[in-house]
Image (cartoon, rainbow, N blue to C red; front, side, top):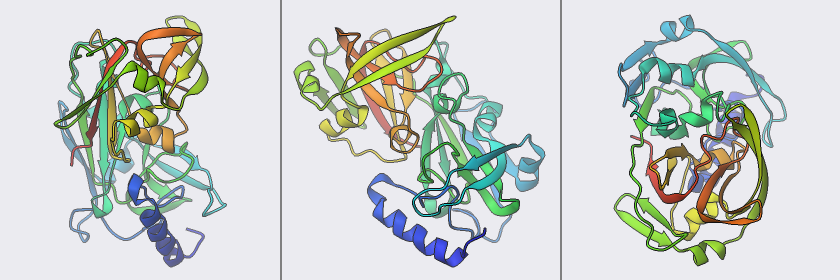
Length: 319
């Protein structure tokens, strides 16, 4: 790969341990590990299974992946390796859409979909399908098959536009699709958020939300045939999760549920390494909102801008 593989492997262990609280992977464009498969028999030819809430589960061999349409992409260097890498691979979004997620009849139903990629050492990274979709997040992910013109021993999840390789999954062997169909609850008081994680439920009142450290974002996005521009003010989604004592990682998904039942999913990883600020706006264009609004700065369309949020539901990618 142009650098000593053993040195890269050792550095990857150091980075992974140092970022364990976030569930981070080696901080490089591609993963440093180049030895065998994931949770399956390392002597068997690598395969990738797409399953979960889909109409047609599939298992792809290496040859079948290579026969699919490919994209070429470049990953930027980072603090560990100054050089960039060029890869080729298959679109993760295309693989998910080919399996046919089982969507409800709802507006922008695809924004309810979460995608978990599993691989080496049972590592899992979860993304929102809306982040990958070119109409919304336009932040693609690939199963890389080649790096710098050389075949990889097994497919690797790579998000080329990430600032580093924290979401890389070596020897990816499973893609699990889930659809978050959630119903709104009535907030206990005006402006409050109900935050649900497994069997735990917490409430952050409007005064508690207003007391959190806040940021201002100037955002713009397509809505219909025009562009909307707004000034949003409020705490980051990360600040809200911390206030609710939620420990998030790269396998965490978050669904915002509007009072009308509209649902959209995001992940903390989008903000941490994807460069996509996530805000729970309390004031828009100087006017106080009756309920918080989820803001996903950088999306092409405003589908993941969820108004009148009453519930935040947190989950982990399917094992």
